[in-house]
Length: 150
Image (cartoon, rainbow, N blue to C red; front, side, top):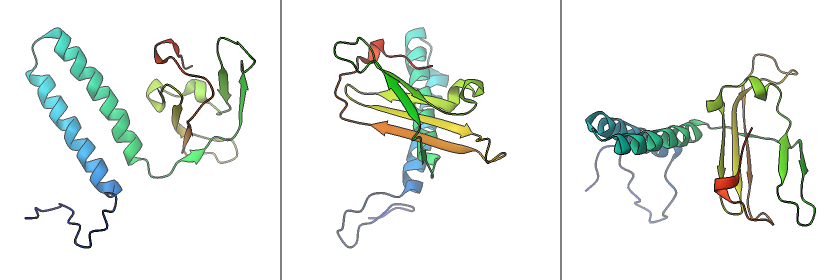
């Protein structure tokens, strides 16, 4: 039995859900987390719910962003043998003046996913671009607890 706004796979193709469905689902998750937070009384649980809400807000924002532009200009150092850290410097104009919530990076053991929202390029004033760089299968492992972003 199908419900309103429920996708039914009548052809059996198992197609991926639409962007609209993903955004709607994440929005519902956010609403539920906020309701739980309003009922929560223990400080530790409140902190965990607030952390989950922040993570879902980023997830929601990523899913609402339809067009990503790549960042092709970057510099990296520290890739020499036995260097303790690798530094990636992406050349984004005005990144230092962007609010913290406009820059987000997820780290995996051998990957990172950098997202930068609302970038205005000097060649195209007044237009805000959203950039994303996702690199996987890096040659060195990332220790998420020791990583940093600036």
